[in-house]
Length: 299
Ligand code: NAD
Image (cartoon, rainbow, N blue to C red; front, side, top):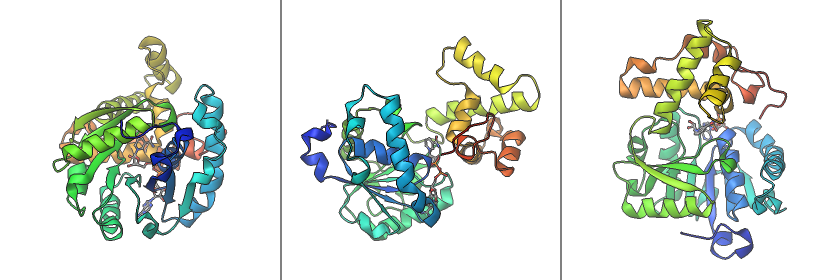
């Protein structure tokens, strides 16, 4: 284990800075997870509107996890929001030990961010890419030290999911895998290391389920509730594929299906037209308040 995840023990973790790029659904969840484990966090986004809302969103998330995970002592720490510094300047990552990139699931945008990162942080930190499907190898090739780049696929909601899929790209060194495993361990989570391939293990499987479930709704074979019940009550999954798609964000699901379709050149990943239509209409799931289901609170 690289470091203790007990904030009370302070020491190495308290000195340690994690830079987070992208303050969307995942960026904020990863930020509060790291801060709850005692890390100092620098949270960056390029969108002033997103940054303006980030502090309030973070306080809401901490309150939510304090209630949903009352058995976890980390959430009782009142100092979690104070350990997250919000910035519009990537230069503040200088000196960070680890950087976790969580920008939109668009390979071109991620490439631009990784090129910029190369200028900012040079050779030092571990660079973790939180992506559903984009090639880790392709992004690592843009880095100052491709061997220090690894995929770190956190799952949503980050504090409540035990597993993190670590993705070893073509260049990723053994030392980087070890550092990443230690870091995931310090967050109280279990790393599972797989090789780089579009969608890795998790999303290659889950996007087939979610896409096919959308086709079933489009063809009026069943309602979203019925489809999800077959998964939860019939197969014992915690959530059905359509509730999961709403949680992820239908825009992110559509983007990921595009990457899978293009990178694997396999028609089985063709995106269901209903999913695209819902995204065009702004029905992106929980974050917009409406997807396959209606939600009272957006995030
Ligand atoms: P999101 O759309 O909620 O947030 C993305 C953020 O990136 C936005 O705040 C946006 O302003 C920011 N951004 C875009 N371009 C930027 C740039 N050039 N510089 C800085 N910030 C920029 O997306 P998300 O759901 O948080 O997903 C982020 C990543 O995590 C994606 O690669 C996604 O596939 C992956 N992921 C998502 C989930 C999920 O459930 N949503 C789960 C696992 C992994």
